Image (cartoon, rainbow, N blue to C red):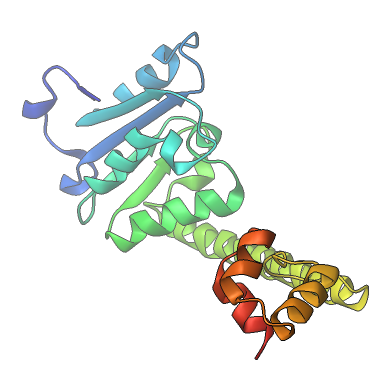
Length: 199
């Protein structure tokens, strides 16, 4: 994280909103200078930066910190949208978290993602609807896949600890007088597994 020189004494812009910047590249060999310069032009208070893969939330710790410091009416200024997000749904999730804090987002390389404006808020509503539709379609496909798999005899859940042949052998041995523990030891399972076969 960087605190810009002189930023502490700089008058807040956006009607007294605090501006928090975020910039990221995916490898240490890449340069953040272009993104930082673009953010600095707005007179931000703080810039969170990282050189790390963004495939997961764990890969964006500085973004998490930037969101966590946002207060009511603050603005997160993101230099490049695709550097902060992994997908449309992920981006919407980030924006929603920021909105829940009473803050907003301004994306410098996507002028239409300036959510400090009425138009930007309308675009957020539209994107949220698209993301929800995407989630519904994914869930529907998964459910249809499970139905087809069950129709083909695919079993879900844990793999059985014993085969049907082993179960038959175990039942016969217990019926012949062997203890649950003895049979379980020979088959490499817990004795409770054998006892359940006899219920």
